Image (cartoon, rainbow, N blue to C red; front, top):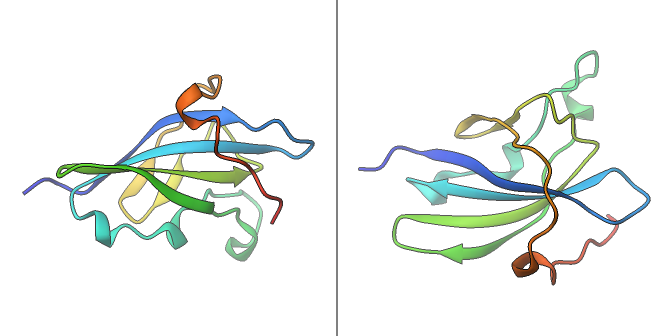
Length: 109
């Protein structure tokens, strides 16, 4: 059985006045156990209720071994990992949004 694991495949700055990034995440293992409600990032000095969370997540790819999702994240600290139900996930360098994700539009919450 494959262990539960989440990896950020890419992070891309969204063209908006706000500080928003599109994050592509690959989830392996018991994918149905992955909880997007637990995707957050510690904000030192802030109450946990004020921490940012994943927004507008959607599945973009599925195979028998893993699934890929994208979601938006506001005010991310690129030096800190994201916290998920599968453990902490390191953030790679920000790159240009690939063409395959160009049709994913950001809607202000």
